[in-house]
Length: 229
Length: 229
DNA sequence: CGCGGCCGTATTGTATACAATCAAGTCTAT
DNA sequence: ATAGACTTGATTGTATACAATACGGCCGCG
Image (tube, rainbow over all chains, first blue to last red; front, side, top):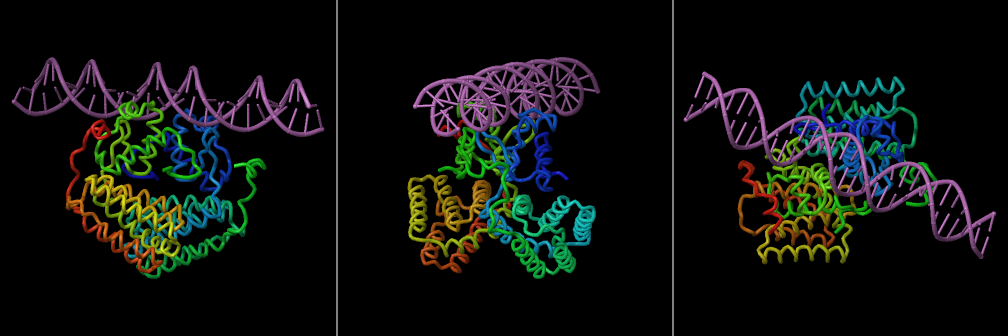
């Protein structure tokens, strides 16, 4: 479960990972303020390590750091939402193709397990967990492609996608898009690179089209914030 | 010269930018240790802000943070070098196409200015500055494409490429690859998207082939000496 | 002469204290 | 009553002090 091999994890990483998970699962919604004292008390660490964690999340664009004002769970704009999915469209299809050309039985099994957990989360009425598992499925494909650098980018984009979905998701039903994941899995199992690439491309387009990128971000926490910054 | 609009710059950002520039221009070579006390004394700030700066650079993979050991200018492995250029190959050609479809006279003029500065740096025998300008040329194309998210990724990849070039550059002559930049510029000025995409693809392939991905890192230098000149 | 454990020094990790800035509520004057 | 300035409380920005860890030299032993 370590974020990255070769880099030793410290308390700040642990705090950042916990916060990132909460954001990913929509337990922390966009716009929420993350006070340094509050976070420090929750995790039992000092502001020093909290600040380090917040800095990392800020660099990943999961939170926005406003000078002298504090850290807030990011609220991606419509423009940023489009850009994130355009970046994913550039990276993920080709990566899925590479993954298909490399996938063995062990890799397919890992992907199947992720899909199963996603289904279990849906059955348990935990849409946040389901979304997280869905993201891990995409990330695992990048890892199978044996491209750590691209995988890291995709991981960031997936996290930001989670924020975008929180803000712009159109239909609230929990159908999600597990069929697409199944189809992708089959293509990978068949080592069908071309198919996997096309599947991923279509899947991402479906995702974007399931968003409502014409509306403004859903209601911010305060009117003042909507009119001010 | 601000790194990013919307985010207010503080002292830590200034220190990080200076260090990043030094790394980019090869005044700080891979492997160099960045002691917190030394950096703090050089820039006249306390370790707190130095640590913030080092953390940002660490997240950008320009430096490697070893727990309880300190920060060192990163030494990308051969594998990482390949991955960085594979990522660039995924992102930059399509981005160059978009840029070509959007470029107006002002954008072309900015690019031409960057090329001119690159030539001036070469004429002044400042290969570090020339390399930096070359990177800014690539980055400006991403900005012209009006894709901030992708541009940020490309910016990171360019910075890492600078480290890779420091470690694996084969021929030491300062010929560089300005012809390719000129050709790219012409394609952009002609709004030739397809041509720009192909040019960029070929240019990146040329870059990779100019590396010697079998040699090993060279000896580092001291921080003070590198920044003093 | 080489090797292994010990200790001193230097550097990083973390917590805390102080300064600076911001937000909100109060008070006054028009 | 409202607009504006002031003041107060809270939160962040920065510096410093202390604790923990690692590196290097020294000594003793084989």
